[in-house]
Image 1 (cartoon, rainbow, N blue to C red):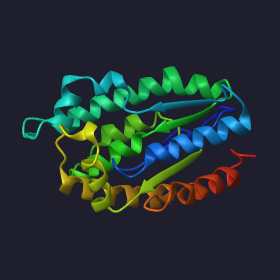
Image 2 (cartoon, rainbow, N blue to C red):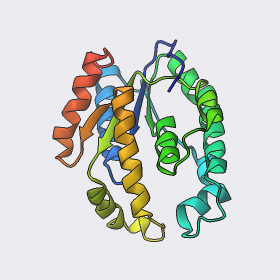
Image 3 (cartoon, rainbow, N blue to C red):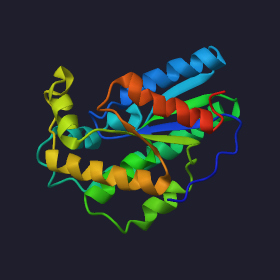
Length: 212
């Protein structure tokens, strides 16, 4: 996927993966490590899609309603893509320009994985819009088997009202693996202990000069 190279002094770090894959833990450890090395106020941690689109009726319907027959997923993609473009322009780019390291919980690759898993493979508008987004300086895929991810999700009290399409999650996980290979992500085996999985994060950040 064609994205813009980051022209700023700050670095953009992206974490991807299905729900239940352990992204939140890896992000927290990364934020703590970078703050310790680079100082207070050196890191900005954000998430995409932002609450602006997550709280819309369309997004909520997709997340919590079992009946998706009246949802055109391309409409969801248009919603989240516009959110990503504006978020990148308003929040991410200024932070990078000011020298901050930005850690993003999900990025455009989440939209791509979900789109491909649903069978949308020829949406030229999506790839055209994506050209407005910055390419991450480091990208990570938190990965566990779909079965373990589903087990983790179902164990969360906060997820009890959410409709979980298990077959879709399996397809999305497979798409994430394909994207990670094409885009040269660092794949994290988050079925292991967080400390063990995090070693791969540290090694990548050092190799890319983000962690001195």
